[in-house]
Length: 126
Image (cartoon, rainbow, N blue to C red; front, top):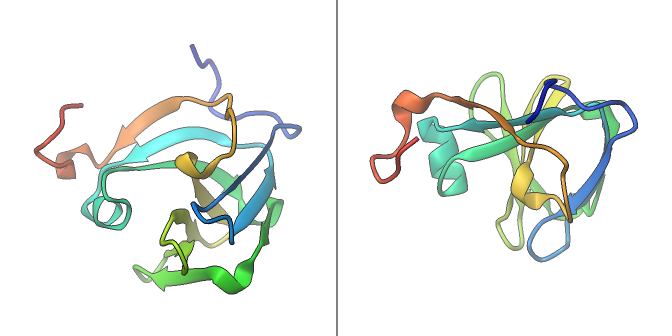
């Protein structure tokens, strides 16, 4: 059971897209996973988007030449690999949500909340 919303500052995660052209490394604190079921996240990810919140300045990205950004609203943009199409980041200002599925290895995190559930697809139950 998860008792607090954020990890400590020493928690480190790294990950990549499917083809490995975009890699990232980040240091905590991380907010545990929030699963967004909004229409935009479903269209973008193919299902719901499980995001790990981090401060943008604590993430180092390698292979930025393969990273593409799509401005999905006035306040946010979405990052993905231009080669393999992997969903990687949702970013707004100084906050970046990292796709939980892009983490290499164990996360030591868990889902703490489901949001925009009224927009969830009719093909699954929450």
